Length: 198
Image (cartoon, rainbow, N blue to C red; front, side, top):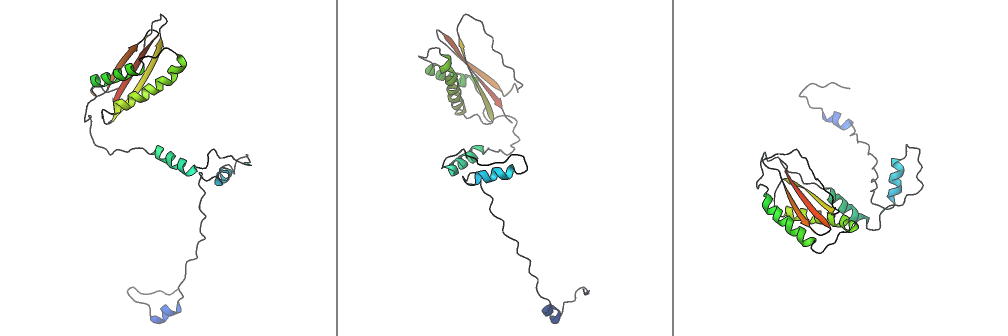
């Protein structure tokens, strides 16, 4: 190789004698198959289990023909809201227990007006009530509050019962509400815990 002095331009003869070297073209990579494609599902499993002792012969994908739609719904369900740090140590609107208690009591009496005790029905009814109460409480617009809803159905058989809950929370902003509906054969108790999330 020739050494050149700084600031000296190469002559025309030197530049003409050199042939421009082209970078070798890299082979194109094949597109990775998606796990939502029916044909590629078995191939992906084989690649993942290649180093193990298992030999995958055939895999029945657990989806129907609408794989693309399921993928979109699945990805959107995983999306989470990310809040920027507001440096706010207190809520914009404090949780008002009396207004929430009135709404929860109203939902409880409407839902259980003509319901008789049945343990099989109450297992589903407790989940439905919890979802309905959660939606009603969220409509109040308490931002940065997390809500925990407990729905308990207790059959009346002459027994005594104690219910206790313990939490570590901020006494200034966190609160809770209880609502009760009593019928001949059972007692329904709803507990709503509102926890402020800074």
